[in-house]
Amino acid sequence: MKLRVFAAITLGAAIAAALCAQSRADRFRINQIQVLGSHNSYKKAIDPELFGLLHKADPAGYSSLEYSHVSFEEQLDLGLRKLEIDVVYDPKGGLYAKPLGLRMMKEAGIAEIPVYDPGGEMQAPGMKVIHVPDVDFRSQTYTFRGALRRLLAWSDAHPNHVPIVVTMNAKDSGADFPGATKPLPFDAVAFDAWDAEIREILPSSKLLTPDDVRGEFPTLEAAALAHAWPTLGDSRGRFLFVLDETGTKLETYVEGHPSLRARVMFVNALEGRPEAAFRIVNDPITSFHYIQKLVRAGYLVRTRADADTVEARNGDYTRMHAAFDSGAQFVSTDYYLPNPNFGTGYQVKLPGGSSVRWNPLLTPPVKDLPFPE
Image 1 (tube, one colour):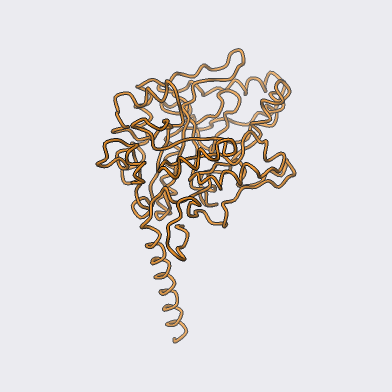
Image 2 (cartoon, rainbow, N blue to C red):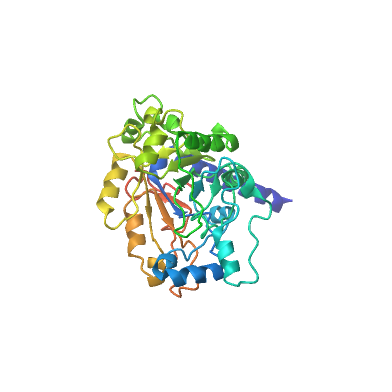
């Protein structure tokens, strides 16, 4: 009996200590952390037979696509807190239901072609999750709504997680093959539909939007430059979406929404614009000091530890170290798990081995402050 009482007291003390540590961490802001994430998080491997056909035609081009990811849930369980989801616009449904790559395999005499979309989800109207239509079409989930439902379910089961950032590309180009699908452009209607799908699946309590950050500041950028990002305590269990586009697509998304008012997604806008708050800077080596300048100024930044399989094939960690040292809050990799086929053991882990660490440039000046897991 005494042992049980002692054990209960010990457990209670441990829980209280953990909650106290978290409450200390939760006073600080989301731009003061650094997390690891994945690039093209939804991507499955190209069918080996199809990859062989494509690689033969363009070895250099298709070698860069020789990577894949485990499920969203597994990535999040491993500690990743930044994902990437690319979508194509399919308002009527069925545009991407019959990838050209399946026909290419059949015409090449491949007898057993893996099943694609057995439930017919690609026939439904709405955004679809695809890397390169017709050739790199295998995804962890077929529809964007399906992806959101899975993320919501994981979040509900882990309500205390730090905010998860999801960067997204609006895919409007296809494969360069005769008969390939021509993706639809992203116009204002498409972007409104994209925002609507996010709000349809995720309640407002699960979102961190530009309106949440801007608050009473005159512009979103003014809030970022004031380091007025929400605290960790106010952000746990939520998602922050980012449109990773420039040019016409960015301008179309911003039009009619000054400082991103009423929009769901942040955008990759250059400094000096009212909607600038989140920057995508892919190369942490050539842009190392630029990233540091952005982070110190108050922007959130995503960079990449590796790209196009180069670092993984060579076992080169130079770019990874630069990414973490730059202070970018979000560092993407394709290799949180190593690819055994490359033989280098290349693997990216957040320094310290946790899922979250304090940002090396913006670490709170508090002694013995625990990481904000």
